[in-house]
Image 1 (cartoon, rainbow, N blue to C red):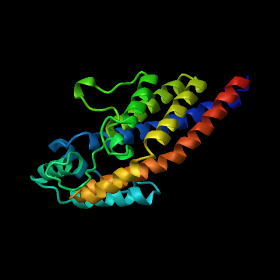
Image 2 (cartoon, rainbow, N blue to C red; image 1 turned 30 degrees about the vertical axis):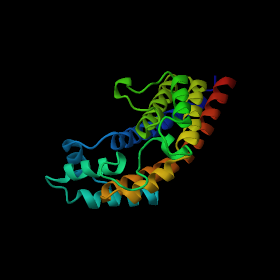
Image 3 (tube, one colour; image 1 turned 135 degrees about the horizontal axis):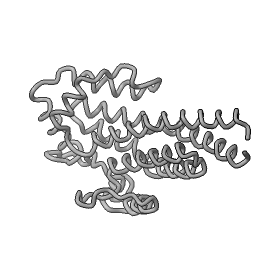
Image 4 (cartoon, one colour; image 1 turned 180 degrees about the horizontal axis):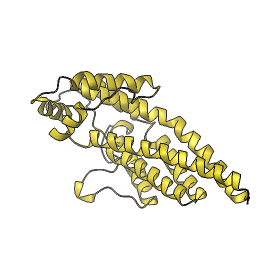
Length: 242
């Protein structure tokens, strides 16, 4: 066995694990932002964050963080309530008499009549079942909620990492391919429409910034996904030939 090649594969796998941990954490952060209104503790935590340097080289993410920061730097005792009202207005259409709210379900943005529980929900449900993943049924929400979709990708990234740490590069590739398919079929197909609508409907800089961060990250992850699959193919082929 070539110990040099084995070490190189292990180093590459370790790099992928580190990147995936960051990606999974980011997806879960976005899932929290979209799932329900922020708590006082979450607002306090976000207000205390240093957003500088978090965007990498992505201009859209940087613009989104700047908007979030500009809003949160003036946080006070009424900020949580203001954000809660804007969340309800933007995502739940509370008091919103616009013709179209940013209802965060894929079906709403991809079905002809803009309705819940359409074909996209069925496809997402099948994708979840194929990986034995299900949202908490007690929540009584359709599976194509953007938060559930982000959580699904985060979970699959963690499974990719588990396989990488076990040296099961073929299985890691299968998990990464599932992420790639889901990202293509259930993220890129509607994320721009969702973010455009949030920008139109939201009344605070904070949620307008969240939309920019979301758009930038989902699109930036396209290249990361492709690079990871290439790396995993290399790892799997190298392992098989060893």
